Length: 335
Image (tube, rainbow, N blue to C red):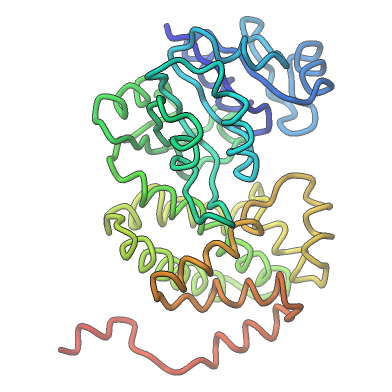
């Protein structure tokens, strides 16, 4: 049995806490929101973000960050990506040297273009940072539906420790050393999911969705490989796997926000209606900046930025994507 502190009591943090407790580990969950912790202690259920998932009596919930961080075998950082840096700063005084931390959020910091694992290492330099991600909606993990993810770490033994902590008969975990590829795929798929949702909102069909998924993956993999990621990562769990589920699922907040924008709502209106952090909106500018930094053509990312920040209509963006210069999908094969 391991002692685990889960930092963040949103839907994903709560679902992972449920999973870890169900695996027999000692789990403590922290949130900065007092009313959230009161609800979790009283109801043993996150009524707002994970309704119907009953939380084990053995789990503890607290607003005391020091208590949640002290003497833990593993800390799981599950706050939204926009709060990763500020939360890591708050954690630092309570984190021991060599502490294992697993980042489970998805995003790229807009002003620095840093991945979340890089942010955590910068703010808590003595820690060992790992990553867990994959096609894994909290709503299904919390119901015990079969799910796979990948654990990424610089050292194989750390990835295998994460694998063993999280693995169960309904949650299968693979290992990989390619944290960069994992995090780029995980962050940028949310941007493509906005586009997929917009297509749904405008009433388009499966052909359009398939086009956005495949061409979106082409953009993500081009950038990720240019940055140093492994090609295999983008055809795997945290690449195409995560992209498919985020673009297609009714649970996807990014797809839902895009759907609402496709029906004519603004980004702000859509995020208000979704009632959760829509990571793709925050990652879109960073994705465009990275494409410019590495000189990678990313037309879908560019159009999403035009819609979000320049007032362009989704319908006009789709038309511009369809009428771009005609190309070969595999130009290098012509010789």
